[in-house]
Length: 488
Image 1 (tube, rainbow, N blue to C red):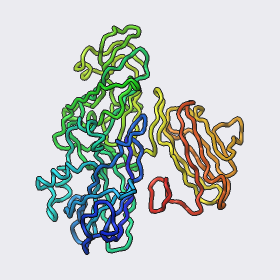
Image 2: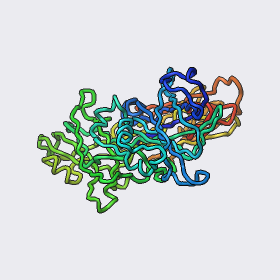
Image 3: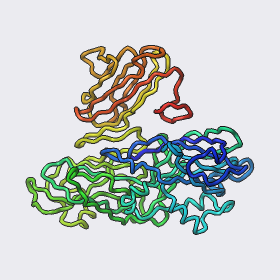
Image 4: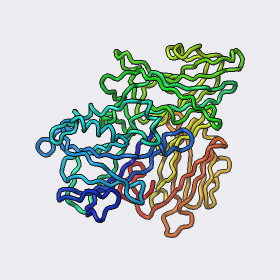
């Protein structure tokens, strides 16, 4: 599962002399300046944090205007107005600025790390102001060369997309555009081998898509901002094979941050002739029944019910090999066309929309844990968070600063100090732990126990901390940002 990036945009009137960065275009009378703040998203990696996977190297805005009386036309029929660059604000790496024309009923699309594609479309006559419709442009925003995604990761980053619909950019001193959510246009696969007597030599992704769409459709998002179905460009073929053999001495049994894939709608869409994307591992098994020779093991992306999964953007598929029972297939081709053989493994599906990094040890994982919780000023105010994990509740050890203790020494699922209480329980869905954070006292200025730090140790190895803060005013909802300067 990969993250959504959060983008907060504010429109500010300013003269060129007041701007820093790429100040090479003076404001015209019909233009205003945009300042955008990007909140750091959950990392795409399953191991150590990799800023490369969430880096913004280029940011371009595509502005369309809806047609019809009062902007009554659809987003599909909106006509292209302009393409504008955005640049990083000096001294503030998370802030970006741009200049766009004032107008109403504007749809603003944000393309991250895709400038070469946009420039090529423009050079081919695909961006004509007042003529090109969004439907026409969308079909041209096709990403190719999936092997280059990993090769160019450090220099170019991963392509991402977001949008703001039906905006009015007016001549005001301050106009807030709220929050834009960006999805990565690719999926990823990481592999970890925890089984003994098996030496990993090489990994492959097979039957990968040869191209993918940069945009996604807003109607294709569910309530959690995950795509419901893959969106496939015309003529896509699932015939790309990727390989990686650069295993290191520090991680000889793992392949992380090397396999990036475009969406593939197989196997649920019939009649396309496309095969499901999967992983093949090349290695040597020296346990009972093993020949000690190099063989090949196919691994499918599967859900908890053992059904094969489609490849969807912004998702990471973490494959953890827990056991090897014999040799695999004698050749790569045989493994590509065969089913699972002699390898026990678990697939952990993690989405970048989740609030935090994913931690993995063996076949166990921990994800979606909050770093900050904001509570309101009255006593007995509360918030809930669902932490994703296949550890048992008994594996969670709670510690709370400022004298935290367990009200019932026989119940280690609830801890509190004089101001805060934290309770954990099984969630309504499998592999979810529900955290409930509550206040026990009303807000008081300069309280020494506000904020408090919750430290959670899971399985005796994995650790995360959450800062719990009670505010003097009702804070912004922690899920969707807003205009208040509360860093959540």
